[in-house]
Length: 154
Ligand code: HEM
Image 1 (tube, rainbow, N blue to C red):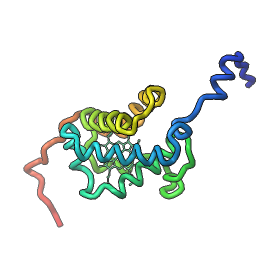
Image 2 (cartoon, rainbow, N blue to C red):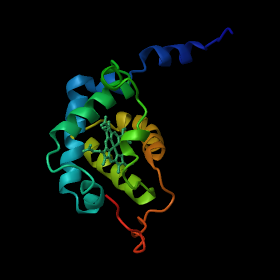
Image 3 (cartoon, rainbow, N blue to C red):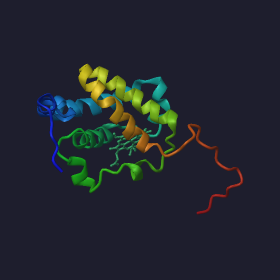
Image 4 (cartoon, rainbow, N blue to C red):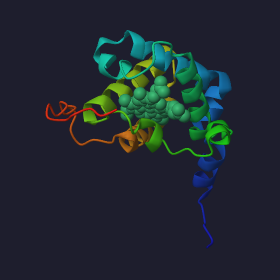
């Protein structure tokens, strides 16, 4: 298939930077670190903070590696895990619309904290929603209470 671009389209294409090119590796690492610092501090994110370990160093590193590839940089997360699919690591957690929105609120605040440009924030808005929506594994926000008739075995 031959794609014909107008000069303006070609120019936009040529100069358009990926989020990774805008932030650089250190910027993506700063974003991942700010993200979990915000989660740690934000009262509205207490519910998802409680899903994570007390020490956030390891998860900061994993998120940075993931975002480096996702934002157009080298596939460092994939090189370690063999996949970029986030379904399995999130499967043990109840992630409904409210939990997704808490995650996105942390990301918005983290972008503010690293002083991201309006261009970058606009660029990330829809794809960030889409990836968070893909991680959502429940339709309901409220986790179901454990069935009192269930008997634990083992
Ligand atoms: C939608 C709401 C989300 C919630 C509530 C959530 C929560 C979690 C939790 C509880 C873990 C495990 C933490 C641990 O092992 O200590 C985790 C792991 C992870 N999350 Fe999320 N997450 C969400 C969305 C996302 C999104 C949108 C991304 C990527 C853009 C992401 C990237 C990751 C990565 C890379 C890991 C590490 C997976 C691994 O062990 O390799 N998460 N998340």
